[in-house]
Amino acid sequence: MEPYLVFSDIDGTLVRDHQIVTPLTKRVIRTLQKRNVLFYIATGRLYNLGRVISRQINDDVRIIASNGAVFENEHQLTQRYLGKKALKAAYEACLADPNLSAHFFTTDAAYYTQEIPKFVARDAGNLTLDAGIDYQPVADLEMLLNLSDQITNGIIIGRGHPESLAAAKQRLMDQAVMSLSSSGPDNIEMIPTGIDKATAIRQIQMIHGIDADHTIVFGDGQNDMGMLAAAKYSVAMGNALPEVKAIANYETETNTNDGVAKFLQQHFELALSDTEVGL
Image 1 (cartoon, one colour):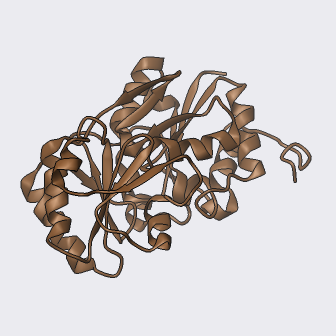
Image 2: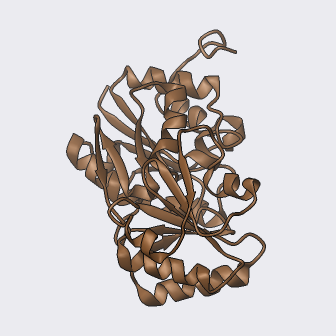
């Protein structure tokens, strides 16, 4: 079989309940890996949290993390950083509004400006998973700037305060020191300028000599829209946002109904018995 690249978002796409990869999904991915298919997770999560998911499948699953600021090629990591101007702008935007909390990520650590309820952290960045994450408060701007050669991306959270988020987003857009996206209505994703999941995908396509005609991408949220344009087979989940479905070339079932696995089964004409998928 000709080589293919497959990229899948995590939350709302590949997994159930933010962390469960089903037996069917595992089996389909493992089968395709034996048939010249490279499978990548493409997530807004920091790298170590992406590894929580990849380890459930196997060691050959590769990772795009931090919305494209970090990605694997074999066992090497390529990283991009937000930079001091972006960190200062984000810190000051949250300092000006007590309804907002910012989280800044390295590959294995998270730094927050304001403690928030654990369920909010879980929904926004899945920080409660046991993934060996060092989770620390930001003491002041100087501390944050001293981490500028490590912080790859971040997220501003404002659950229940859309007006605060909108004002912060406009403030950051006006300063033009980073790229902005969102993985949900209660957050702003902060990414290095000119970086998104699509930029990582295009670099990986070049490295492996696999074009868009042999690339499949799955997503459900706003921060997946760029990478959908990098593949001929752009697939929106059944639970995806309307704007994601509008630009995708295909639609599959929801993440809770194994939409990724079922599309791949059909596309590659895989026939797996109940015994094979561990049901």
